[in-house]
Amino acid sequence: MQENSTGKSNYNSLQGSLRITGWHGFTSIANYVWSKSLDNSSDGEDFEPNAAQPNDSTRPYLEYGPSNFNLPQRFTWLFGYKVPNSGGSMQRLKNGWGFDSTVTLQSGQPFQMNYNFEDDFSGSGEGDDRPDVVGPVTYHENNPADFR
Image (cartoon, rainbow, N blue to C red; front, top):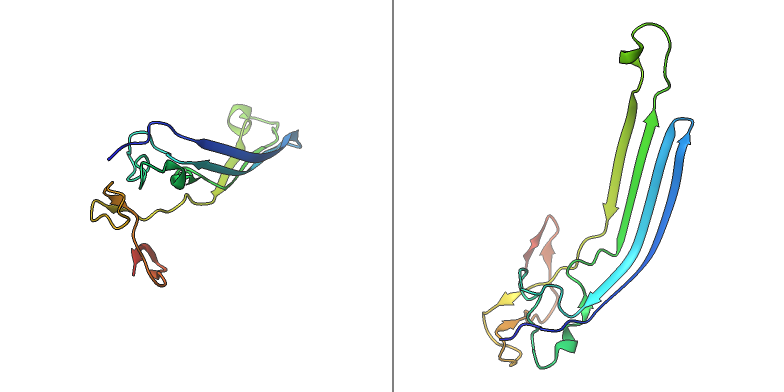
């Protein structure tokens, strides 16, 4: 069994940002990133199963696909409002208040099924094959880890 000593990767993205600062006490920053990260070895030491060990080390180009850390879409929104100062007594207690909030939405990471050291179905001699599924794969909607 060999680990991939050289890797090939590619990252492309489209990024956009909108910023509003200090408009009637409102501050807002919205960011959106659409991206795609591709590689043939996302992990140099195999901390995640089969991330560094190709199924067939004589043909590592077959492993080229979405990275383990690929997040195709990410949206963040930061929002703040500074409450206007008020006059009168106890100004130290009444002034300087505000509200802040952050929202982050992102798509999920790629999912890979592993079949660690169970058998050598592909005949590669490596010992870390992917599952060999014939027919439809079904899963329990409330528990994505429950495949049948």
